[in-house]
Image 1: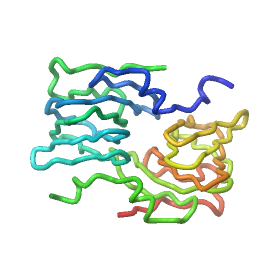
Image 2: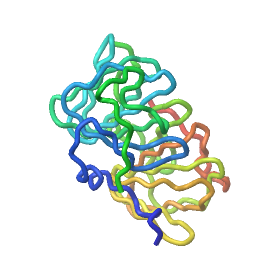
Image 3: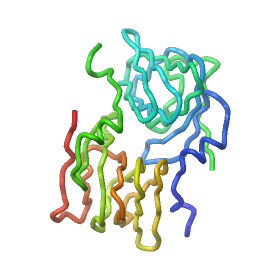
Length: 123
Length: 123
């Protein structure tokens, strides 16, 4: 059986890293990527001019702050931030999420700054 | 708060339908769709010439038969069937999945036939 037919186990992948705010690429679909991340605390306000961004909470609890409201995601809930919409994720407890967006989408979008990191691949 | 900022709760969406092999669109990301489906039994062999297809198992157990091997997915596991690769999903027990693929991707791909259904939207 070739390596390509082994499924991606999300819990296994999450057990392989502990860094916060660092996206880990676990699958590719056409020119899109599935990424995992662990979050705690507040990120930076930013937007993505060219793409929507999907957040799915696996464990914990994520608040996606928008300029006019907050969206609170519990495990098993997802939300798509539309392109161009400023948002700032915040998590009071450690929270694991799955992201789905085009390859090359930077975590900090148009904001840049010290929390900018390209996604890493985990085996 | 506008309707667009309510998150999608996957369990809630799954509770809203019982049909098997009928894809329900629950979110849109650019020109891609997030869909849910309930499966039991065997589908039809098919492929998608123009796109990869992502399967994530939420509950139950899904076997994606490929021509040379089977990929077995438990809850919390995902697999991307590459474009052009023939596959046939089969589930011994009722299984709930999330699909991610470009809008307009038909469930039966190049095979057609009586199980072909466009995705429906659930509120």
